[in-house]
Every structure is written in structure tokens, then in C-alpha cells.
Amino acid sequence: MASVYSTLTYWLVNHPNIANFTWTEGETLGSTVFFVSVVVTAYLSATFLLRYVMVSLPSLGPRILKPITAVHSLILFLLSLTMAVGCTLSLASSPDIVPSHPTARFFRSICLPLDVKPSGSLFFWAQVFYLSKILEFGDTLLIILGKSFQRLSFLHVYHHAVVVIMCFIWLRTRQSMFPFGLWANSTVHVIMYGYYFLCAIGWRPKWKRLVTDCQVLQFLLAFGFASLMFQEHVFGSGCSGFWACGFNGAFNASLLALFFNFRSKNYAKKTRLDTWAEMIKDVGKKAIGSKKID
Ligand SMILES: CC(C)(COP(=O)(O)OP(=O)(O)OC[C@H]1O[C@@H](n2cnc3c(N)ncnc32)[C@H](O)[C@@H]1OP(=O)(O)O)[C@@H](O)C(=O)NCCC(=O)NCCSC(=O)CC(=O)O
Image 1 (cartoon, rainbow, N blue to C red):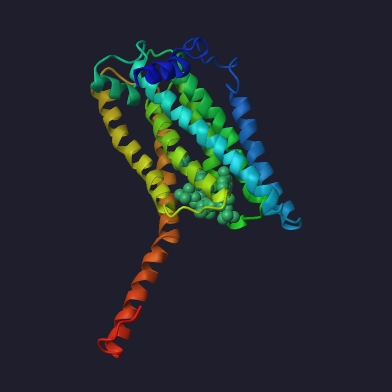
Image 2 (image 1 turned 180 degrees about the vertical axis):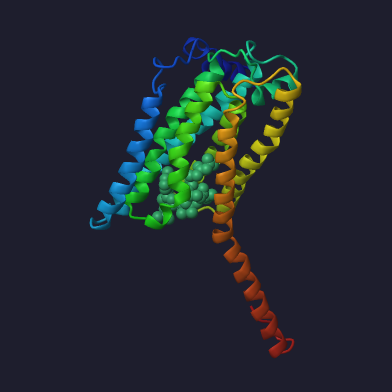
């Protein structure tokens, strides 16, 4: 067990390429406002354009699409797992940012010091996370090519576009709360891409609702921890990128509202149907006396 831990720590935290990583605006891949603007504009334009072009074209058949979707989801599942483990180990073992006391270590995941340098393993994983959000654009392409237009929701497109801007702001402002956000979202995406992968290989899991609930939970936890960060910023020694956290707060609040709407549309119906079924059963039971009905 100890050797697994130390091997993982070496490859995901202490490897020279990771430990010596420094995010430098204008030098690191994707580190300019121009890059983010082009990427997000290209994503939105391509999505709307392809959506309308595909209306008059035949969809790629499931024989071609399902294996590609499965591979894409599997890659994102493995990448999310690697980022979640990498972030956890970075928080547990980076001596430069993380003090040895567990409570202080937790606070480091929600409040970075004002003079924090954008270097080391945590920032390395934030950069990987940022680039992985561009890879997630593939989800939209797969939905459009399969002509599953009902799944091309506002929630989907809005999330995929704005999350890239959010990650760029994390890095540019050395924003506090990003280690928690990175850890929570990567962990949730392990479950989400696991679910998507299983759907793509033809096994539709029964725990879809659990995936949605985990997504909602990450936003709720973020609000809880943000209040602790606020206290630490105001009454403690200050947190880096405090004002940029407002962007995250607004984005999380909008996603929370959209996910509550998604939940009520996708799962509440079932509950109502169940209620109706039970009512009909009761009426039936009364009508035929003590006879059992299914
Ligand atoms: C359970 C959810 C994860 C997904 O809900 P859906 O209603 O979209 O799920 P579904 O049951 O229709 O999904 C199964 C279908 O997805 C296909 N599928 C598989 N892999 C996919 C991929 N990588 N991208 C897009 N589609 C994919 C399967 O082949 C299957 O198609 P077929 O049905 O043809 O067999 C939900 O909680 C959710 O997030 N809904 C919002 C929609 C969304 O776009 N979410 C992701 C971005 S938001 C996000 O990611 C927030 C966060 O950060 O946590």
C-alpha cells in the first residue's frame, strides 16, 4: 500500500515536469485572453452551425457513433480519475503550499495565500483540468452527430462554454477555492463519464439520478466552503483571487438552478407516475375487495 502511495505521489506530484511546472501568461499553452475568447467563440459558432447543418443530413449511425462515444467517455473517465488523484495527493503532500496540520491543509484547498506562485503540482493539475474542458467539447459534437438534439440543452452548451472561462480565471487570478473545485468536479466526472461510458456500450445504469445528485452536491458544498473562505479572507490572512471567486459563485448558482430544473423534469415525473400508479392500485383493491392485484 505504501509503495502504491509513493509511486503515485512520484508520478502525479513529484515528477520534475509536474513539480517544476509554472503557469506563465502568454507562454503556457492556452494562457491568453485571446486564446480563451477564440476557443469559446469557435465552440459556440460550431455548435450552432453544425446543429442547423445536421438537420438536413443523416445522423451517423450508432454502429459508428457508439464506439467513438465509448472511447471518448473512457478517456475522460480515466483523465478525471487521474486529475482527482493528482489533486488529492498534491494537497496531501505539497510542502511548499500545504502545511502539515490537517485543518490547515483543508484550508489550503479553499484559501491560497495572497502571495502564492502559480507553480507546482496543484497548478499543473489546474492546467490539465483547463485543457480537459476543451476535450469535453467532444460531448457536444457526439450529441449533434447522433442528432440527439433534445440533449443539446441550454444547460449543456452553457456549461461547456463557460467552464473553460472559469478554469482560465482560476489560473490567471490564482483563485482560492480552485483546488476544491478541481477535486470535486474531477471526482464527480469520474462517476459521470463512467455512467456515459456504460450507456455507450449499451448498459444503461440504474443510478442516473445518483450522478445528478452528486453534481448538485458539488455545487452545494462549494457554497458551504466559500463561506469559510470568506471568513478566512476577511478575518484571517487573506485569500488569493478573492474577487474572482464571485465569478465562480455566479456560475455555480446558475448551474445549481439549471440542475434543479433538470432534476425536476427528469426524475420528479417518475415520482408522480408512481403516486398515480399507487392510487390506481388502491382504487382497484377497494373495487375488487380482498383480491390481490399487481
Ligand atoms: C445524468 C447526467 C450526467 C446526464 O443526463 P442525460 O439526460 O444527458 O443522460 P442520458 O441518460 O441521456 O445519457 C445517455 C446518452 O449519452 C450518450 N453518451 C455517452 N457518452 C457521452 C458523452 N461523452 N457525451 C455525450 N453523450 C454521451 C450515450 O451514448 C447515451 O445515448 P443514447 O441515449 O442515445 O443511448 C445528468 O446529471 C446531467 O448532467 N444532465 C445535464 C446534461 C449534460 O449535458 N450534462 C453534462 C454537462 S454538465 C456538467 O458536467 C456539470 C458538472 O460539471 O458536473
